[in-house]
Length: 108
Image (cartoon, rainbow, N blue to C red):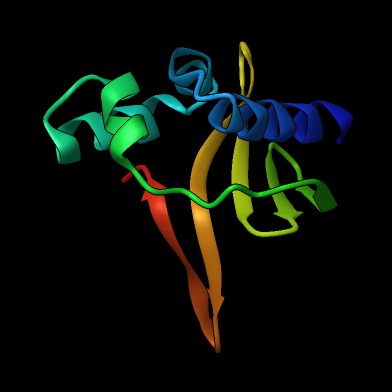
């Protein structure tokens, strides 16, 4: 749980510091590919133009095997565990009543 929490916090810190290369390194491969395809540019500039909330501190972490849900003060992140560590699969997520979360950044 700590590793997932640390990865999510590192992603948010990178965004807050406008360190887009570091934030991109913390994205899951399919999420990064989808972002680059949607924006027709490399990850760093694509992420810079993507308006994600400044999320604040991690409020809670739920672990489901190799998947994690991190609730932050102003955002929700979904992460998966890969061979090289935890990566952000979806960000900018808001709950929808009786529906799955709606995420502004996600992989397909």
